[in-house]
Amino acid sequence: MMIGILQGQNRLVSEAIQAFSEGDYQKAYEYSGDALVNIDELSGDYIAAAWYYLAKSRVQLLRLAMQAGDQEKLLKMQHALIESYIDYKEALKTADHQLQQDIEYDLAGLYNPILQTGLSALNTGNDPQQPENVRMAALKAAKGYLEAAKDISPTYLAADLLGQVQLALGDSSAAHRLFDESIRTYKAKPPAEGDFLMAYVVFRKALIESYQEKNNPKAIATLLDGENLLKKEYSRLNAAGTLKPQQLRAYEKGLRDLIRFELELYIEDETLADDALVRFREVMLLYPDDYDIHIAYANMMEKRDPRSAIEEYMTAISIDEGREIAYYNLGALYNNLGSENYLAGLNANDEQIADSLYNEANRDFRDAYRYMEAAYRLNPYSLETIRALVQLARSLGLDEQAEIYKEKELELRGF
Image (cartoon, rainbow, N blue to C red):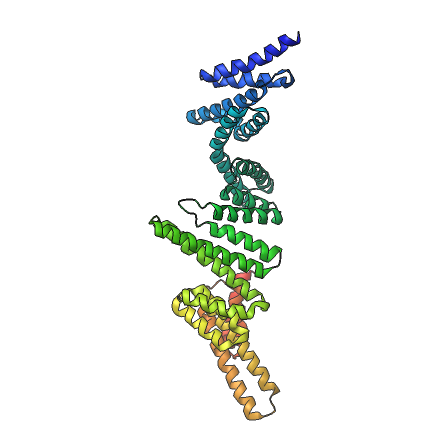
């Protein structure tokens, strides 16, 4: 009796193989599925074959449904890729050498569609327009797909995307390990065409080191390593004559973004003040016309050397007169200088010195008002700028102007 049962279950696998060879993927899928219902009754290589043809026929059915645009069937098969991946993995457990090779070949073919499905789910999970429950479900799905893709082929891209999922799920330690793996994998085997979006893998890794680990020197080291990686890739592709215009743009943008983040970390960390001055001067020689870098340097110099900061803000304005931040920061800096001079005048014992300080304070306040007005003209909807103008106008005795700006503040606030 047992022999008959074994022959029956094994025969279902044989029929699945036959149906698949004849192109009847639906029957192959049904036969292999039926055989696995009683997996303990399968013998020898039939177990691996059943799992293999279940996965293989499902993939073919999915392909046909996509070609036919059969939305109803596609909806029913929305998890077909990951289910087939799981079935192939089951087949590998008992497959012989030849079948192992066939399975690995088929799995390699699943890498891109599984990766793309995971990426699509990640994008949904990161979409703030989606409800929270939808976003969380999408992130969990992305995690499953991208873990499968990474298992099939541990590429730098799979590690990076899975790291982004872990970061979105709040596991920064796992994300950091994956971003580090992505960078190491890329360095070990750079793709022939290059990928300058690696800048943002480095960026994310450094972000965790700075904001989660509170280790700015480590983050800066990561950013410098990333900058060197981009430069090395640029040299490699340029020497080979394969550097495309869009790659050059991606290289330049990625490199600047890494450098800007590096400079932000220098500004934030007072213990790196001396290194910051040296690095800023190096970068400003490389990018003399970069508005944001001049703004960052001026910001850092405000406490150390206010007059140098003023020069840098003026340089930024000469680069781009249409951006408000340099005007606003100049106005705020002059206001601070005016306040300091006024206070020093109050504390001066000599009347002549006090008058000189009051006059200097008045000039600073007038400069502050002038630059704040310039910032307001560029952005008349900034409450911070309007409030600063109210205070400066009052300090200068411009009561009418103070009332005008006070009314504008009330209009913006709505109460």
